[in-house]
Image (cartoon, rainbow, N blue to C red; front, side, top):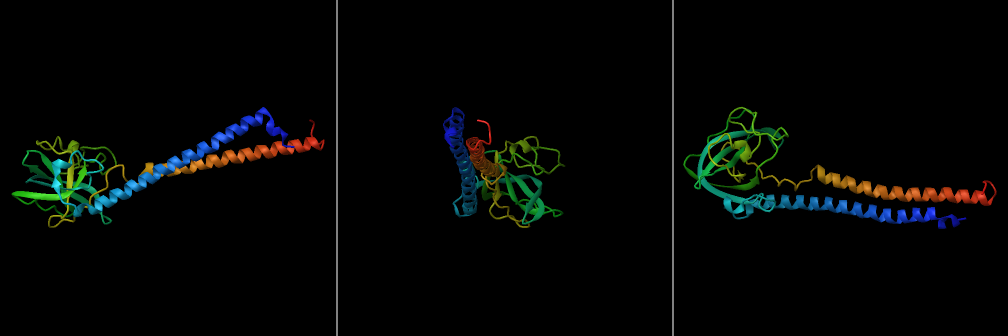
Length: 250
């Protein structure tokens, strides 16, 4: 009854199934591996950020340019505070407020954006300390997306920034600005400390869950191929049986 499996048509079907199922399993496993890699990267970034305060701070210039290895590292710089800005639309502990960002003009002449802390909406930002200061905080890469979720370097009232980056400050201050910023380990009086954020690309973002979704899709494809093979087999087997019983013309 199953002699039809030796026909050229079924040889083609069997070869296709024999190749398609392992391919789907391989692609599903590969996508699952990509998701697990992102999870591991996210955990490692969180661990590094949590341990940043326990690592001895080094001069900020030695950690540039900022990458996944140096993001969150304890950095230090010396200079005098200058112009101050607020970065609205930032949440901390479930409350909405602003970062207080003050430019630190270093001995080298460049200005380093320093997030001195966070304050709730409606509160007045305290003035920065005068004279020469040495600051210590977690190093962060320049932001590429503003608080409104889009790329922006302007459109806000004077004294406010949409995102923390050299691009958003280039037309606001005369000095050369670091393409990085630090958030103080201990906030200045009247402000709450801002925890360091994990570097971009290390979180469980949409791409990570896309990998997980693709994993399921590939395994579903493998199951569908097997299901269709059994369905065709059953149909042809029933047709062959009917022919043997004389219920269907040969």
